[in-house]
Length: 121
Image (cartoon, rainbow, N blue to C red):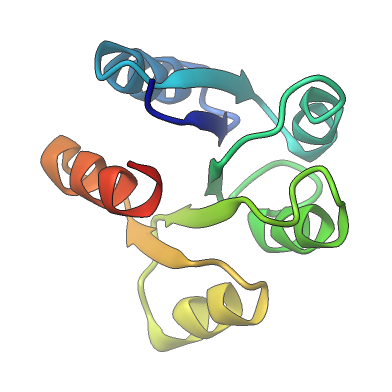
């Protein structure tokens, strides 16, 4: 069985489409629409990888990544930032929040699946 993945995105259609794609590849996937919901998921699900939208309502993806890194339930998870922006500033913020990778939306399915497979098998 491949790995456990958490998708955090306030665009539920995009999140569910991505989740369906990953499930077709036999990944176990959970979806949350914001930072608080993502942290609540950690009560009974410890992802190996989290795909975090940067433009979340309230707490952005950078802040959520920092919270996840500080939480023992998700501290070891690989983190991928999904953003509509790819300037040096955004990449620097992603590095500062300890993301493992920063991808610019829209992300191609092949690119994403290749990266996920490299990161967690």
